[in-house]
Image (cartoon, rainbow, N blue to C red; front, side, top):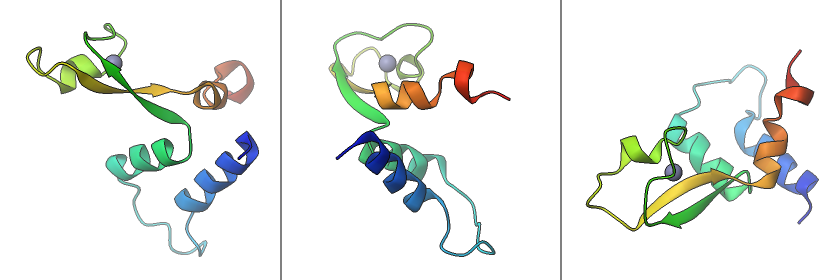
Length: 86
Ligand SMILES: [Zn+2]
């Protein structure tokens, strides 16, 4: 599967079938779709990543190893503010 295929899959899962049926996108569902489409990957960690990562606020220090969501190269490229910002 190419990156374009992954992005098409992501858009298909996020955008509604009808332009009149936008509904609400739940954060948990968005996370799941990002994982399914290769924008995020789960990485096992034996310590918190750092202040910039949400895993420290989500898990307790007695729960290691933890599963941390990390942006994949595709996810990072999609979030590149140099090319995405207006
Ligand atoms: Zn983390």
